[in-house]
Length: 185
Image (cartoon, rainbow, N blue to C red; front, side, top):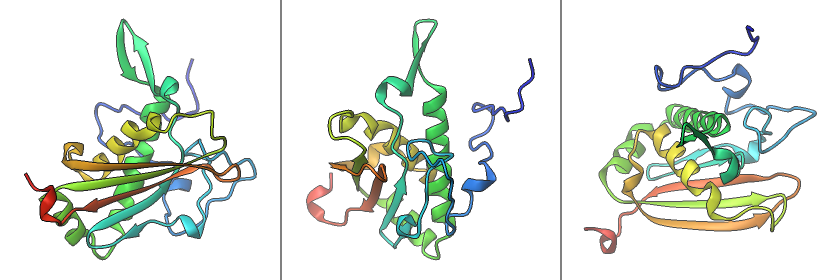
């Protein structure tokens, strides 16, 4: 039975098209039924705009799907679920767009490719007890690094923080170049 929803072939294209309402980073996308955990209905306000400097990128993103919803078992194999793929694609494209719109994109990209990195994620959950802090780390880390064209094995330092914000669940991600010599190989 044909569906009215667009179908994406995730294997043939690195970045399938994003719904047009998600493309403008500088605008505010308002929805009367905004659900912050759903990337297609996530509320973006000016306080959530990306910040890109010559050594750091900071973005505010929807809370990733729970670990139980990130993976599916198909024929005995654990695969990224549809919700996981949608989230990862959205985050990758959002980060890539934030970088592409920045006047310092080339200097940031060169610095991020030239040395060790640190990742900081602040999780703002609707409830303190419903989610584990580390459940969203891997998918968020992979998606941000994929959007920047980086291998996530470059991250040598990770900081996770858990907060409660019932009105606006989200994650605030910061990926930075580490210039101190104590982190070199």
